[in-house]
Image 1 (spheres, protein in one colour):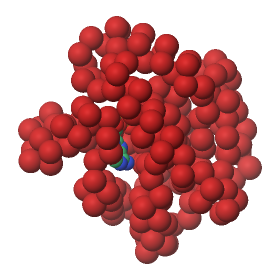
Image 2: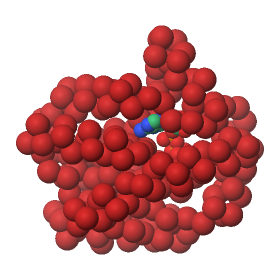
Image 3: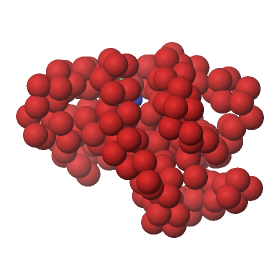
Image 4: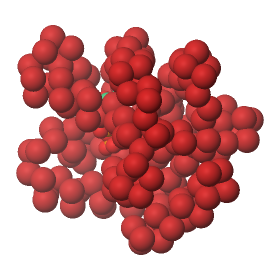
Length: 191
Ligand code: ADP
C-alpha cells in the first residue's frame, strides 16, 4: 500500500501517519523528519536546509527527490509506504510518479487533510508554546509564510491527483480519532 498524506502545516499529518504506521505496518517517509535528521547530524545538506526551513520556504526539489529515492530503494521490500510532507509541489509529484513507475509500485491513495487557516494559526501557536524552541520553524510569523507556500505550491498537486482518481479529502477539523476513522474508511476501499 502506498499512501500520500498531505495538508497545511499543523493539519495533523504527523499524528495521522503515526496511526497508519501502527495499524498497517507502513514505512513512514517524512521529508521534514529526514531534513531535521540531517540538521541534527550537522551534515552539509543539513546546514543548507536549515536556513531554508527557518525561512518557511521549500528546500530544493533535487535534494528532496534524491532523499526520497534513496529511502525508497533502501526499503523496497517493505509492506508499503506513507509519504508525509512529500510531494510539496507539482515537480515533486511528477518525480514521484516516475520513481514509483521505475520501481513497479502503485500509488493507492492521496489523502488531503483539510483545515481552515484560522484554526491552523491557533494550533501552531499552541504547539510553539508547548514545544519551546524544539522546532525553530514553528512560530506564528513563519507559519504564515509556510501557509502561503502551501497555498501557492502544494495545493497545485490537488488537480494532478484528482485527474488520476486518487484524491480523498478528509475534514481535519474533526477530532483526531474521527479523522483517523475517516482516513481508514477511505483506505479500506483500496486494500
Ligand atoms: P509540517 O509537517 O509541520 O508541515 P514538515 O516537517 O513537513 O512540516 O516540513 C518542515 C520544513 O521542511 C518545510 O517548511 C520545508 O522547508 C522543508 N520541507 C519538508 N519537506 C519538504 C519537501 N517535500 N520539499 C521541500 N521542502 C520540504
